[in-house]
Amino acid sequence: MSEQFLAPTQLLGIGVGKELRPHRRARVYPGAFIAGAILSVTLFYAGLGTLRAMDRLPPPPVSDTWCIDRRFAWLRENPNWKNAGLIAEGSSATLRNLDFGVIPPEAQQRGVANAAPCFLTVNQTRRHAPDSAFTDPIHLQWPETAAFTRFVWKEARRQGADLPPLEEEDTHNSVLDDGRKSLATDGGRSGSRINHQTGFSGHAIPVRNVRRGVLPDDLTLADRAELRSGKEITTTTPLLDAITQNTSGHSEGYAVGVPRTYAWCSGSYKPPGYSAPPSDFTAVTGWGQIYPKVGAPAYSNPDGSIIVANAKTYVHLTATQEWILVQDQAKYGITGAHFVSNFSPKATAVEMRLNTEPDGSAAIGAPPPGYNDHFWLTKRGTYPAGSVDGVYVQMEMRTTDPEMKFVANVGADWWRDATADFRYSFVNNPGAGMSNWVELSTQWSTLRFYSWSTSKLLTDPPPPLAEPKPAPVLVRRLASTSPPCLSPPKARRSN
Image (tube, rainbow, N blue to C red; front, top):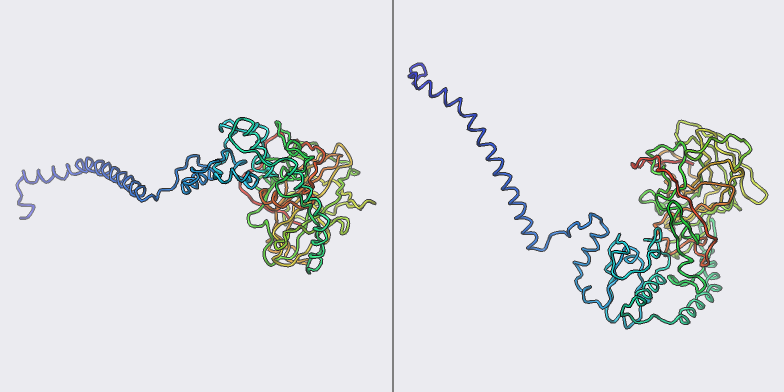
């Protein structure tokens, strides 16, 4: 039937129906949305229930901290730890640094398990050692694992724990004596072995083999401790000082002119993947850099100098687990220039005053405004491709004028070979990293950098850090202000 023949009432009904449909849709849409939401939530929890029934759920993020969550997951996956006669608890100092090898055999027969997570404080454990035993930065970085275990064991016994006694001190000391007697022969073997290898520019440096994890009888735990009070850190060994200089947040000041977005703006920086050189690289260079300190008055005396002495670079051999000295300032000297503070490729380096002193040290001029002092050992250290897995750099510095307020750090670059040219793409010389900023003074200060992680360094320290006797107490005064830096890394530096 044509619309023109419809009755008026029919036409009215059609119009009214068309007007009412949007209102009905307004009621249907919210209902459908609510029903869909309920269905989605139901399906989500049904899926969780299914995964739970299949035992496929991941461990709950108890703390949103990887270390704790993974530790709890391990405990869940290895339920037999509950049957152990001895269960260790504590923070990551316990997790990483216990050595069950020193525990009496009768205790080991009862079963032992290290159930410690991370980031627990001393007051969160039932039995605990004194707070000073866990004070940062020893936390995560205790240098003598067996001694640490003995200390915690004895402290637990003192507080009433039902644990058997450890071996007598006389036996402990005789073990050390045997280790000391072996030094004379170990050095000769390592030296002859390295000298027959080709491709090295250095020579073997035998490390004193005091047995790993055992402290000499004249060196107590208190002697090895590193204590922190406010903005000061007191170190008593070169090893602990090296750790301080390579732990983020431990700079003594900050450098004027370093862009806030550079990864090394606040100090210690180790680019991922470069603790060891690329497999086809065969050279390395240790370097240092000096900047005016943020917040200090500008220095303008042309006669002021920074003295650099005893710069050395060591590399670690993968095959023999030995450290080799490949660069020595006494043998090669240093060179360098004033580079613009941000190492812009558009700026030209300025000649730097550099004089070699009678004792072999180098006196370099203070950096002019907008520039730094950047210097390195003149001849690159070399090694066979694929033979090295780490580098350690050490230099001593001081100023000649107490009015000089500068900060410095040291680092290393891997080089393709002994003569490769510098490229701004850094394909020929990727950086291994650098240390924290150290404030210079008229007193000598030793600056140290290592490319390894701290945990790896503690297992096999380079010769300058392996001396078992304590060094003079050194106080590092950390920066009193927050770093003028941003977190996104944009690392670059040149030599």
